[in-house]
Length: 132
Image (cartoon, rainbow, N blue to C red; front, top):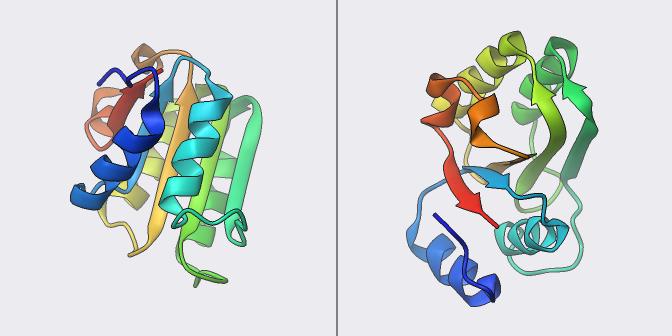
């Protein structure tokens, strides 16, 4: 779905009624990334359990690290994984899919990519897509 010009109110209302725990942001808008993370964390400015994975590509090793971390208890409140990359290797997508099929409560995933076409259909089907 395409986000409105002022997405803050939209995201707040959407997250109240949506059971989604995994999101794909396309368009590379860092303001929207920060806004979504803040909304998922309950609106606070303190992100005690925010884990950011940035780089040119997300490889299987990083996906396995995310998988292990997703099974650990949160430090406080929500646990959020922000994945900002240009490419996610197919093997890494498979590992992420396993996590998203049975997500832990209060564990959220935000993937920021230039295009949804970079993801395989099974993983894409588990994501709520926002276009900035």
